[in-house]
Length: 88
Image (cartoon, rainbow, N blue to C red):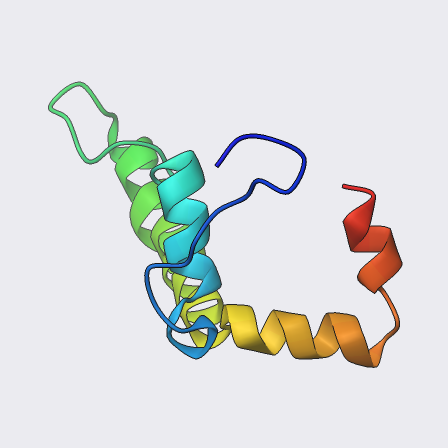
């Protein structure tokens, strides 16, 4: 909602909302390797995608799926960062 006290309502509980789902909703694909294979790619580009970019994507995806909004809120509170967040 707009206005001084406006904001967003969560569609689920904070413990069920992952950073992966938040970032994907805001940014779309999080892939560092770009789009999938095309016939115009060289063998070296295929190698890089398969051996470098795809594993990075998989690790990033796994990491972001393991952290929930609830986890982040607990960390923010535990480290006394709430005022820093309010300024964002």
